[in-house]
Length: 79
Image (cartoon, rainbow, N blue to C red):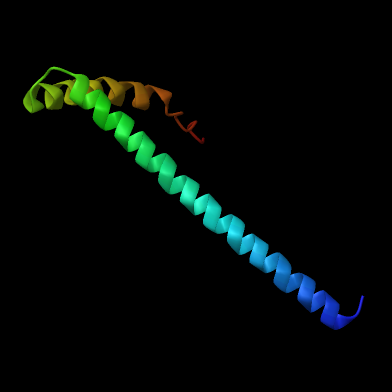
């Protein structure tokens, strides 16, 4: 292959890569929007006040904190 042909192929490949990157970004945005919509719908389906939901989330967070500490590996003492 000559240099000009290689340059043309490289330019074409870069265009395709840019197109695919744009598609990936578009799908990521769609996925995030869909996930947010599902979360919002789930929250709306719960018959609770905002204060009750906040309390529930606080309870869940508090329950997860000790589990996270247990899962952390302790470094062995050097000596």
